[in-house]
Image (cartoon, rainbow, N blue to C red; front, side, top):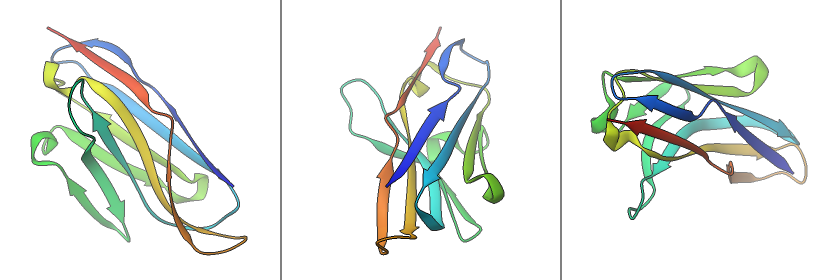
Length: 120
């Protein structure tokens, strides 16, 4: 089994910054992709940023403000969020596409989610 544990959320004023972290552990052979999604109140879950084989994709709404990075040795992904806006409020979910060491196969995993609240 694989677990994703997020940290770093909280309450911040508009214009401020936060950094989210997500550490993956368990029966991991290879992590093919890691990233972040978010779900605002009353809305569907949406992509924020994902990194796969060195290619990074950002949602248009966060380009220039958010930066995703990975520490492959630590199986950890970070999301640095600058110039936060009220509309960035939501639950942020860590995502990983993992090739399992056992019993094998590629599986998508999700963290439990962490709340980010941006106040005006």
